[in-house]
Length: 418
Image 1 (tube, helix red, strand yellow):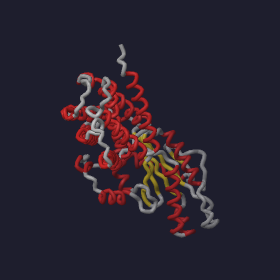
Image 2 (spheres, one colour; image 1 turned 180 degrees about the vertical axis):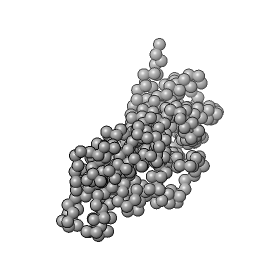
Image 3 (cartoon, helix red, strand yellow; image 1 turned 120 degrees about the vertical axis):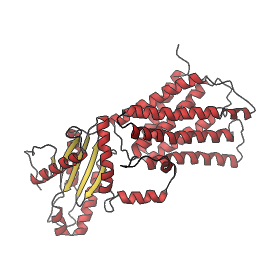
Image 4 (cartoon, helix red, strand yellow; image 1 turned 90 degrees about the vertical axis):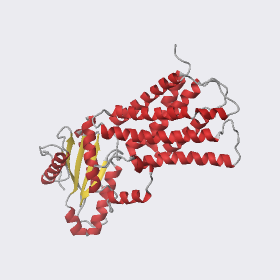
């Protein structure tokens, strides 16, 4: 016999997951607002705040789903946007909800059956602890078990955060004794645990599928440094500003070579771990010295900025773009086959050739780029060899006439010259 609450729970799982992914894709701010609303619902829904007088099974199972949804959202942001955005999300949610309840309390909202300050605050602390722990658990597993499949890392992280959530919730259950009116006993701990496990499996599967087919732009593990829970909890604004300056190219706003040296080894290891292709593209502006000599260095800088803008506007969110030095750029394309990377680079090459430089003069008609491509782990599993291979093919592209993409050892028979 199917429990009466199961169809409702399945529908809630599908709808809330879809909403989270849509809002995340649209804007991280929208996702934060949605998760904030979910936290508000949780604090009112969970006993002892709820005083509906109805059987609590569906109510409690829905609240377990929503609390796990918060951990899912936090882990999604962590895997896709890195430590800084996750920190802002977690503390923004917590302090935002605290402020909302503080305002309600100040204006005299005194419906004690719903607005029960000790229970609300304890629930928010539980959500805060779980949100921090889901990041910490995943990070520790990632660093200690480097070859474990991604779905297990996600599953164990969500399971650990959910277990902490349940333990702390049980530990604060005594707060319900302070209420003048109590509800019917909640479902057994065993049933709650089984339902929570099912919810965790659902969200783990969703995250694993996203990671497999969409790819993640992960920024959380600087090379040679372990993830620090203290640094994650402590928001150091000046440090963040200084780091952002250190990893960005001042002229184009792209990541610089320093950041490439940090990011590239991590992406190579990720590609090997998940057996996902990682394409590396070296891009060089053709005849850039002639541009500088003809129009001046100010025009050269303008063209560098224009090319960088084209690269950013015509790349995916998961692609990572660097100014490697001078007129040379590098793009990392996670989860991208060689054929897909060739198509993407030819698209970029065509868009660059459309940059309008007529305002500088008529001596040079168009800006073109040459591209060298290599792929990991199909062609090599070594990061240094991958760089050498892509660089070698870039020189081959320039030697064969420029304005083309070379992705093999064979020079193309059709050559488009500048």
